[in-house]
Image 1 (spheres, rainbow, N blue to C red):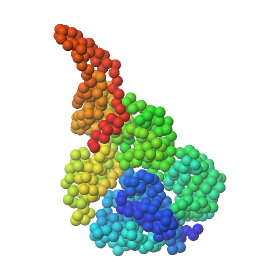
Image 2: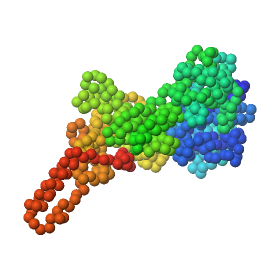
Image 3: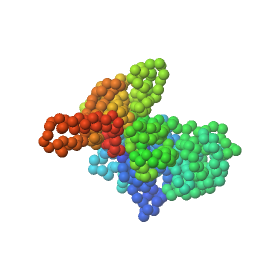
Image 4: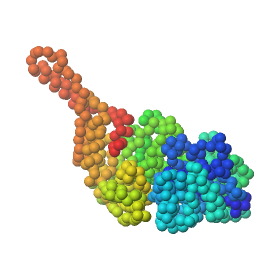
Amino acid sequence: MDLSRIRNFSIIAHIDHGKSTLSDRILELTKAVDARDMRAQYLDSMDLERERGITIKAQNVRVDWKDHVLHLIDTPGHVDFGYEVSRSLAACEGVVLVVDAAQGIEAQTLANCYLALEHDLEIVAALNKIDLPAADPERYAAEIQNVLGIPADQILRISAKTGEGVPDLLDAICERIPAPKGDPDAALQALIFDSQFDQYRGVVSSIRVMNGRMTSGARLQFMQANAQHEAIEIGVRRPTPTPVAELGPGEVGYLIAGIKDVAEARSGETVTVYGRAATEALPGYRDPKPMVFCGLYPIDGDDFENLRESLEKLKLNDASVTYEPETSGALGFGFRCGFLGLLHMEIVKERLEREFGLALIATAPSVEYLVTKTNGEQLKVDNPADLPPPQNIDYIEEPYFRVSIITPKEYTGTLMDLCQTRRGDMSKIEYLSPERVELHYMIPLAEVVVDFFDQMKSRSQGYASLDYELSGYQRSNLVKVDLLLNSIIADAFSTIVHRDKAENYGRRMCEKLKELIPRQMFDVPIQAAIGGKVISRETVKAKRKDVLAKCYGGDITRKRKLLEKQKEGKKKMKAIGRVEVPGDVFISALKLDD
């Protein structure tokens, strides 16, 4: 295929600014999908994506427009899925930056735009939703020019819903985005930028050919995995998978090579021809770094092996999940899993439950701390149960986030208050326009992961937007709070918190567990403790049986004798009794801030 006719581009935007709707209009305009088969969010294949109205997986499709072949990659907008975006951008020469004409620049718009500039991509900016009564394209075009330096007269006005301006956008893509470069006669270098698992055909990899040609039936070498496989089928998505005989430089398509092992087709892998291999691999991606950790346990202990297999399959579809086995005295066998953020954790848990039919308990989310012991040894701790005893700890460092919040100016005060209560330090405040402010804070990650996003949205009536990135570790005064049921530590409830907040956390957890734990035949003390010091206590009272009911009349000593006998029995029961905690108690108790 003639390289000068190919255009590879991604659509990037803040969440809910109209990327998937724009993809739908492009599919309609280029007649890639029959009108009778068309549905909203056509490229979002997961039920979960449709229900929540968000894109989770990057999707790609090939369409034809005025003698040009366009490869479109639709990317997620939520900050948790920034890794998916960075992988998609590595396969492109340009991006379409979509901004809502009623809301203007949001935090994720800036983050994705800077990501595109880092990859040295051409940016075509478009203001979407101009059909809305609240749209103010002139004002927001000036804001984009002011903040991103894109001339206002080059910013297109479109409505992805009605299709207005979309043909002009496709023309602009053909004119402004450069054609890919590549040597068809060189050794094959193809980049895997996404993979998903098909239970009948094995791994289906999305690939972008950089140099050389990939032909069906060729013996391929996977350079980083150091494995060989035969190309059973190569093809392009139109959006229905369509097999082709070969893919040349600049083309985007899919590869099926009968791979069953999930580790052999990682994103960022370079594929070349066996026997005529490229000398060096393409620059891959940075490995995604988990930010949030939690334990996932099957409610039914017999499902442990199912959970292991399900995580293996899910990891191929989502390479950013990490997991390792762990055990808990309260919950049995499970896995310690790492996620990119809280939404990512929620999505993964829901996918495991839906797609693999599992019933799971997730422990409270935690982050990775650096612990320096008194002997100078340094540990990484993401599970509170692994924290050494207090007397062996010299100091603990926790990860900090560089947070940027874009908000209308009237909500500045409430959002500053939120950041301050979360131990945040303001680094700067910028006015993007007379009405909109960007706040920059350094906030501990542990304070962001639980409900920071929800609080920010409720305090700003939904208008504020958030972007964050890891900025490093800082020393903090942190302690581990343990919850004891009948003097036995329930490790699922242990957590690491700042000393100033430890007492409040312990008190609230004890009160909540008192409501949730069913009454036993003996008193159950619930205690919160730091080290050996108890900071809060509640008691679940025992069920009592009226042993005096049969003692009508007679001497008081008879009654006292029966009560003493009952007291001894309760004491013995308490010494040997275990508190059985139902699974739903963990789920309810861990939703402490609901």
